[in-house]
Picture 1 (cartoon, helix red, strand yellow):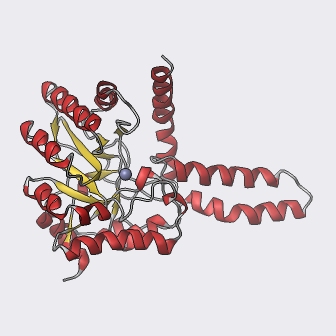
Picture 2 (spheres, rainbow, N blue to C red; picture 1 turned 90 degrees about the vertical axis):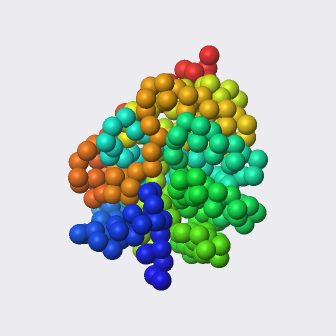
Length: 320
Ligand SMILES: [Zn+2]
């Protein structure tokens, strides 16, 4: 069977197959990643600089400086979409958020997390690491059996140098993850999350060719750094508006306690944790039907306000 038809999406396997086979506009086309204005600017900047220098104008160096700045910012800031679409929200029918849990499976945390989700009748998507799946293959089936979905979070989770991987190594990380699932007869997801959210200009063409959505987040708990679960949960709760994608990890008891506080608060607010279908995914907070044909530059700049706001909030909180 064609791997594209075996992908399990944000919803169930059947839903994803439906999308791939019957969508009026092929998913590959909707995910098309033509070079964005920022990519063109970065590529053409050195030539423009040389031309201007040839005419004796030092102002050309500014063009080069801003091209470097754009490259670094788009690579390192997860919600910047200068290289292509990053899903940061989803279109929802009511008070619903999408809970995403990274870096599993983990025998010490996954079963407890699944029990917690069951207790609050919440559904989540687990972005898994291939190597960890090989250590605990039964946990993936357990996640799927309990009604949750999975996403590709690379084979080895190279978080420190993912941003500087070349196309061959990037493809290798993604394909090896899919190979790990195939060997276990598990469905291959159509969702991908980059380690630490970093990306480079090679990533989107690879994802597009494999019909994978790059999933970011609306808010993250920083539960790998914060020692106090209540603070981590509060970060997510502040952003828990309808359509938000919430990110936390499964690597410690702090994460589990954070999830418990979060689920309890969401339950009190009557906000449901659901798994959106791929066609609900959005690059920004909007109900526009044009969302998958993202406008990277606009999306990047519209995000700037909320990013600086959250930095300010973080700074105030940490400096207390
Ligand atoms: Zn991760």
